[in-house]
Length: 89
Ligand SMILES: [Zn+2]
Picture 1 (cartoon, rainbow, N blue to C red):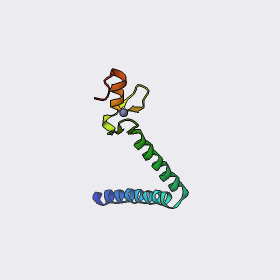
Picture 2: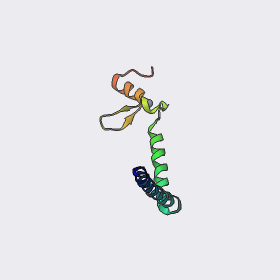
Picture 3: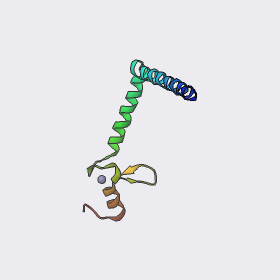
Picture 4: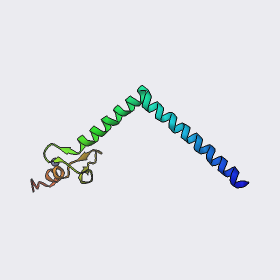
């Protein structure tokens, strides 16, 4: 009997979660809000890819970048050349 009560509670919560997921999916798929959200996601993706391209050394792996004290990522080779003067090793 206790198992049935617990099962009913779990199924009720699962039904609420499923309905909420369906509501969010419909909101993002069929309304202008979803288009705005996808456009913002596209902008974020392009900005993140642009941060990985050094104008001198080209595309860099995200793990090889150096984070400056100001908070922005920087090409590690440019950082080494600028800081320690070891040009184009
Ligand atoms: Zn560079």
